[in-house]
Image (tube, rainbow, N blue to C red; front, top):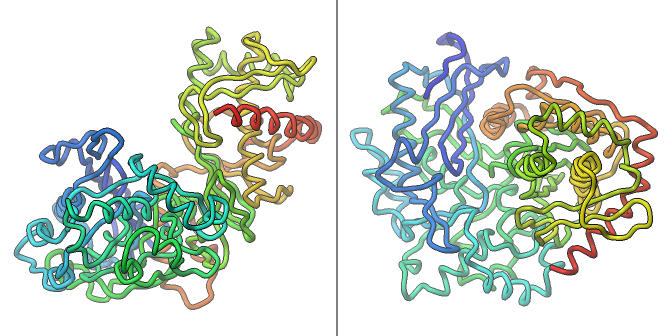
Length: 536
């Protein structure tokens, strides 16, 4: 689907941001004033049914993969649709983008020659169909590498040491453990013919460059292999996951690296300028940080089916829960991230369980109880949670601190919402977040339209809360922003590149008395979570 926002002058400079996500391939085009001029997308299930994916993936028990060639064919189809809409490829001065984090691609020996020799008369998919030693790429939903995770932590000295080095303890979906699984089974697969291992992000950049593209620092941080302190591969982790991995992965580069000019294939076939630059691609979460235009101290709270919190920090403190990545727009800073499976779906469940039929009624019920809920707190994990691990519900009375089996509906809904954001503040602080009144919380996702929830966030974090329109494709937009920033003269701050972008809207300001109540409640919540986690 294409959405042309406005006519584009043929002399105007344009920037493209691509997103090779789980379910779609998307692209946005920004002009020099950072206005979106066009958007195109390919839905894998609908537009490429021949690959038989469900939600963009194939599932076999705990193993979840995606056909590597499907992503290439999607790019063929996307560019053809853009061409049919007379998109002015010749005006694009730079492009970048992102891929779903933790997905990996395995290039067969000799494939770089195929990339360099692409011919405009044939599609990418046709010419690259024999280039992959592993035809089904492991993706972030894969949960089949528990034994590899256990070995990695053991050989690296424990989960906390691994986190201190790589930003995260061992996770099943992280690329190092996926490589280890393939390496262990190399006698039954074609792993031995692998010449280069890419992330989905660097794989996408490789297509545009016509040669192997480097993995960037930020997406590389989500592999359990990259030392976030030295900005290089960690040999201890590499050795645990396979042989010759430093050569197979190639040297990592800062996320703002201009990799070079676009492949002649795209010049000849679609009319790109031969001077169009390809900037290193990164992961979708880091790209969203760029798309949301975070600055030092800022926090993004994404309120969707699952909740995500990520923030710009200067001095990281990796933990056994949460992740730390190298910052995608400042290689000397960091990005910390927390993921919660229990987001809007859990809020909807509790709303329904309380006999409430609309969010308006939900908010009315919230208004019946004061901030702090008279000390009543709860943890509601209707889905198996990862921060912390566990599933179930626990409630603590504000009167005598005893556990109880139920709350009145108006106490239940407040305990749910306050508990969700006390949890986020608790773990964000452990990862290096410092709360000041200068901090901004940027809210996005479906529940960011609920001003009552946003007020609780403001009071818990003691920060102004802002929303911004057009963040549905923040990962794509982040790619286009980085494409522009990377062409600016050396030393230019990312904020200089995006100063013309749409303004934020202030939607909630913290209330001093309410914040004091939450600070008194935070320790009580943390202890309840610790006791809950100890049982799981």
